[in-house]
Image 1: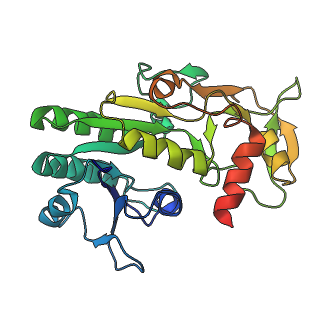
Image 2 (image 1 turned 180 degrees about the vertical axis):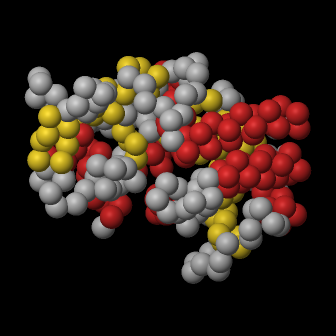
Length: 274
């Protein structure tokens, strides 16, 4: 038996672009709102064409919803909830399970290690929209008998505020011990591999953190990328480390020894850019 296809919603976004480069040909159906070059595209609006969305999902094993509003590029944060609900309804109609791209932003500005049991406490509109999305999508999925998993994705190299947001004159907090903020990260190539494994894992929990194990210093990432930065004294409110627990993820997806290294993360980002 061959591997079932995955319907990827939001395939023209940054993460979708990485998957299209890294996943095997013919393994996915790519959704877009406008015609795109190449094979495998399903052109439809998930919000206004539920019938077309269900037809696109029919015969697939999983709907992977990457579609949603992005801070700085969209003001319609409500779309995060609406698109997730549309994906869950299509999953129910087509008999397909659903994976939703959520965000570590649902945890808010908390220090330490964050597990999936840590209650959401978002502080920004984006995080609040993702928290509402999770709550309503899981409730609807339970009512409709659909399997749904919310993936709380950490910092993805290139889509973050450090590598992706770097500009000349970049300043970065530095603590008295000489360290810079440590955060959960994942390289885009590793992310594509992990998502491939997850969409082909039969049973998953309702919520999973998604990042490489451990935490990475932001200054180390900039150094590995050869990007100049200027240290500034970290204010008292600065959080030294925010780390996503990856125990659940590691139970179903093995990581390589170097997947969390700054050099690996930067190299993946550079490879994808090239």
